Image 1 (cartoon, rainbow, N blue to C red):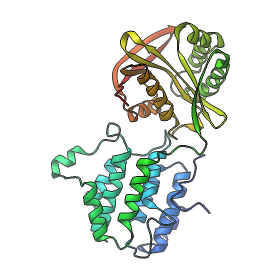
Image 2 (image 1 turned 60 degrees about the vertical axis):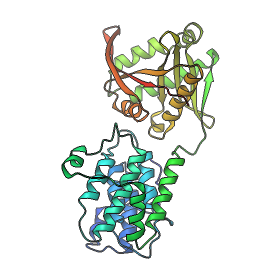
Image 3 (image 1 turned 120 degrees about the horizontal axis):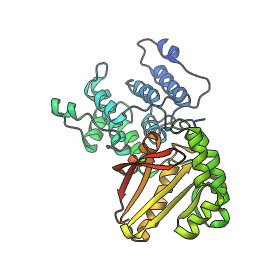
Amino acid sequence: MLSPCPFIPPQERVFTHDDIHALGADRSRLFYDTALNYAQSLWLAGFPAKALLLINRALSCNLSDVRLNGDAKPYHAVAWILQCRPDGRFIGNPRRHFQHLATRMVEPHKELRTWRAWACWYLAKQLLSETEFMPDLKQVRKELLIKPRRADISQHLTRLSPADDREAWESALSWAITHPVLPAGKISVVPIGVADVGEISRLAHVIWPEVYPSIISVAQIDYMLGKSYSVKVLEEDITTRSVHYALIREGSENIGYVAWEALTTTDTAFLHKLYLLPQRHGQGIGAQALQWVEDAARERGLSRITLRVNRLNSRAIRAYVRAGFHFASEVCTEIGDGFVMDDYIMTKPLTSA
């Protein structure tokens, strides 16, 4: 269940395309409100890309009596959806989408709508990894496109808007950069010792059967859980290999776990495990746990962090790319009983904090 976007109207009922279609060419305050209500319904139904499109449609209105930094905040909503997009749900490429929208705008209010699109593009540029969400470089070369600077966008919104576009956009940009979105409960990463490895085992036996059936067989899931997550094996990881284990908690609830090892001979921190309950995916918690590992590795003077990830685990791969990892190699390892681990090796240099 997705949480409602806090910057557009709460859902009093489910809005559909029929609500928009019934308004025809109307671009009044009623259209603006309806489009934002429909965006909320689409977000809650699990369609973040479509929700962004409806916010775009709300911004097609040329309204002088609407405060965009008022009860509803469409620019904030764009930033929030970009940050809170759930893994596995189609988001498209917002950076490219807004670039195309800004350069292919039509009437009415073409110029104002163009700069509103550039404002949304700038939010996407600031919040999304260019490695994962690439701009349309072909268009840039073909059309000699010069992308606007922040000051350009601010200037044109001030010049063209009958509302408070510049103030609303600048506010959304500042909020997005300084307030990474996390769930309401306080997230903590708590190191543990051998006395608590039973909780790691319990969480693994909950998480793996939910996450991995689309990636590896049920038989391999059972085999790997038995091989790597018995209490005895986890205790040996800590006592003989000096693997660092920690529980990821929201308040007092354990919602995941992380494990890493310092490989001092190669100046590397190796990330063995980072798993969350599926309902906690896409909320920035994994990034916080990963930051904990990076900080700990820096304290020990290590220069890089490396991990293995299944080549079919697209959700995890996207998260690691967003965090600054790049592909180093591929490796396929036999692990017994006819099973293999077919992985990418990904790595990230650790600069000084």
